[in-house]
Amino acid sequence: MQLEYDPGHKCGVFGVYNYNTINDTINTCINGMNKLQHRGRESAGISYFKNNELITYKNNGSVANVFSSYFEENHTSTCIGHVRYSTTKIKNDMDKNDLSDLLPMSADTIFGSFSIAHNGNIPNMDKWRCKYMLKTNNDTEILVQYIQQNVVGLGWDRCLQNLLSDIKGVYCLLVLTSHGIYFFKDSYGYHPLCLGFNEADDIYYISSESCAFDKKYYLGEVMPGKINFIGKKGENRLYLGDIKKHYKTSFCLFEYIYFMNNMSIGPICHEEIENFRYKCGQYMASLETETFEKDDYIVVDVPKTSTRSAEAFSKRLGLVHEKLLCKVGNCGRSFILPTNEERIKFIQENIYINDTTKLYNKKIFLLDDSIVRGNTMKQIIKILRECNVSEIHLRILSPPIIGSCYFGIDIPSCSELIAYEKSIDEIRNELGADSLKYLKLEDINNIVSMEYFCTACFGGKYNKDVLELNW
Image (cartoon, rainbow, N blue to C red; front, side, top):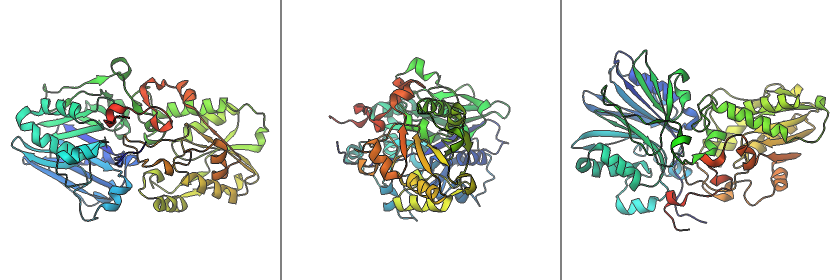
């Protein structure tokens, strides 16, 4: 199966509606975006209204870099923000001085100006390129132009409802207008979007993940296919609740395994993601049926998403867990870097061992959440071999990734995947490990029901309706 387009981008969105404008709305939004940096570090931007004029400020770089010298005294009530992780194609094609591809994206209508922050992907770009004269490489422009051309005749509510049915895709949207914030996710619910409310300060938070605000303010996950609105008191329309009781969803399993922050609340299991990862570690340990001398082994994790799994794995087997692999500061994650050269350089410069003496002549259970291209793991195993470990037994807390993603994860071709058309032993040999085990989909189904997840990249079925293709 070959498709003619590249997938979109994994990003983070954050919005604030503040009923008490004495509070610093803009910096509250920026702080929330900073806590979503694991979802993207290539660019950051915000939109807000000042004296009824829409202001958008955005640039390439991390939140800290983009807003290091930004100061705004405006006591606005609303602000939306975006952190971006783009595809390689967009990264390479983009002029560093051209910010048109960056989000939020804004437009004008006779109803006033609006701005969009978007996380997700519209797979069938060619269809919309024929309909609209797109000026950017970003599929967000499709949404902007759709709204711009339809909102005047239909009004906001009907326009956005029609958008959900007309534009097939996987997306979470924040739409800032002069009268409030509309926010919603596609009808399939692939990616996270939640709401929080700080009653003491009278502030609503809309976020890709709940880790961006105090979890005591968490109200719930946004229901798929429902238009939410926050504006003047008494006008709010919120659709939150238990997704499992109301909708057949296809939430991205890779979000649970890799992308989401440990402290975020999972949309399906309604508990912190780290609890799911802990259970994965327990289950992986239950698959170790061979007897071994415990004094000869230690458990090492690849930080940070597999740390809780390693804790559970070691506890179940009665082994010592050593946090020996470290990353330099808040350096981000290699997977979301746009080129292979940048990923390898990142690993070499930012991953190190904090105490090599604990590795000498040891046998290691090395735990990681997943392996995509294999660059990170090859480098880590090389580093460990240089520390004179005797054996490396690799345990991966997900199934092998064998398919591309067309729903927002940057896996542009099967040829980049280390597990594609390879046996477990061939993968093990390429990585340089002594043994290799993955969790299977049926194993994860014993932890959380696969009924509610998209597992396409792990060998599951693709949702043909979203792709709008006849296969």
